[in-house]
Image (cartoon, rainbow, N blue to C red; front, side, top):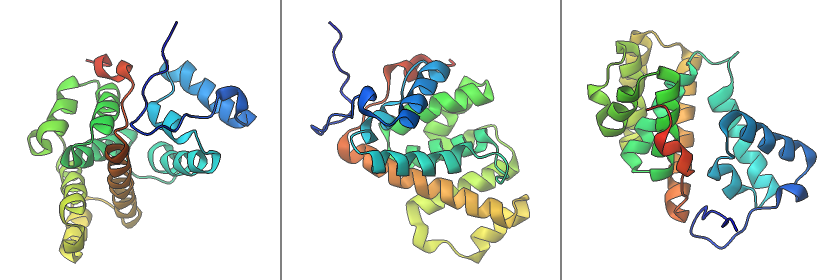
Length: 194
């Protein structure tokens, strides 16, 4: 008999997939097919359809949008890992570290970003992006025009700066939520793309 995985520390079971609206059932099925699992973060939010939809909407816009975003998927995942490293978010470091390994094809890069992004083999443009995300995480009230100008000087446009800030902001929120409820990562993430 298979045990239900422990998603987090709260006694709030997710909605059963059969009880979900058809579009959410389909979304979870696509996750199973593409990822081989439904990420526990989605299952954690699945106790409430409005909360799940809000999370999915923001995540999909920030992390999967390709047409309006000047950041690559890898660069967005890099921001997720650097912010999560500062916040010591076990869930996001595990899940998004795996994504960095997959998208970069480089398991070393994922580890560097987790431990100390400043030693990572990234472009100067990416380094400026990560410096900004780091500062947003440790001292957001100290962001000033020179910080934004450093991004422009590195080659980022105005909408790119918005997107860098939005991704960093989103992961600061999700890190805090994951830590507060002790959200667990899917075990599959640990060995992926090493």
